[in-house]
Length: 222
Length: 50
Length: 251
Image (cartoon, rainbow over all chains, first blue to last red; front, side, top):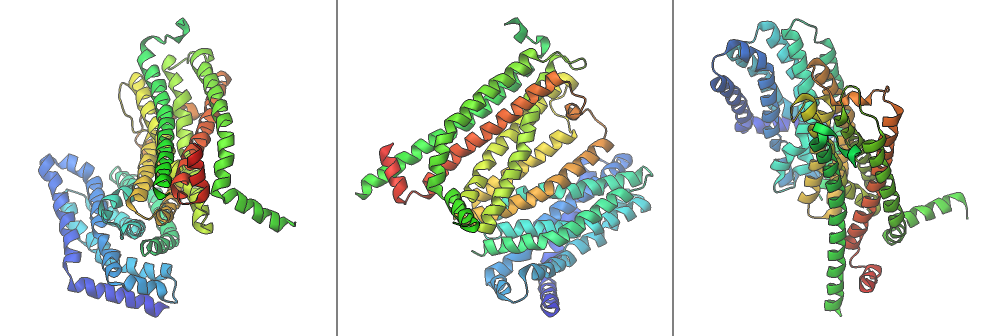
């Protein structure tokens, strides 16, 4: 069972490494969009510091959404997704492998490049640290929730348009708690409560999302 | 009907209640029209299949 | 006949489209009649007999449609998710139809809650919109409804579409408390004017009664409207069957 799990991760990572654009494009999108804001606002240090958490988080949401198509589409089209449903291992379990690989390819690079962007937006070291922590807690949740959406829309022609309508409302609690944690940190208050909520949402997502994703994939394969 | 005059709030109250009426009525009109259309469509199908 | 057999028989009877079509047709005029009565009573109570509010003057009367509409938007989503789950687990056609017919009604009430909340905001705080906890939650709920309707329309085979939408509705219903809680948290930290004032338990009886009457009236409207839409949908899905063909001839 764990053999299948690690094989899927290895395979996805290998494919992503060969098709490096899968990793690079969302990253470039992330950096470019964030850079747009200082350009649009002007070099207003105080204002940029104030809205930096919001900018980085909203852009992270959008970048994750853009990258979701990679999650199931190629497997869907070449039939390997169908193969996975036929295995003795439950699909919900295998799905967690794919999402883990997806996070390693999308979420992790995002987190790694954030310190650079924090500098562009005049964030303090302490705030940047909290930002990284919120991203660490939040991006896996984004991958999990996003996977539900892409599992429902992978078979549709206009899937991409509907995808944003489906998952952005579900992303909002993560956004709210992350940005609240950061605002608290900036003002010198403790962000423990918000971080605890983010952890709770993550745990909820890890336990429930795989089943919804597996069910949705089976519907899409029809 | 003087007690139905709400002073400077007239517009807002009547706008809200008017909107309510509109929403309720439209929700009745559309399904009724759709049902008529569907029955008509089935009748035509029956006739063509004879 | 023992208990299991009678329950199975009731299940098959209730879940059978022609049976539901007939029964709902019988009940419909009474449901809508009762709705009209209660709606009129609620209007009278809210616009005539309820006293002027000490703080907000006459404008508060909007709550008699705003709050019941908000309650309905949540209630209908619950029904949609539950019937979706029933349709998904037991593959019951009627449950699928109830689920998908509830969506536009729920979306209408959500829109009404938003619009009336917005209209209320203008005389109160001189702004057409306020990001308070309830309005923001209602906005997100509207997006959830629109997502359900969009997904259903995007999938051609309607039975597959119903299964996909059921999954979405269930995921949505799990998220509603999360969204509601996070928005409240977000709102209390960004202090602002609030449309949620009238949820407090200190509401006066002469205001509470019209509110409850309207709430029941709206529920009746939902049930009646649901019956109307479900009956049409049954005619669409069962159009090849004999009883539908005969019914069309008689009409």
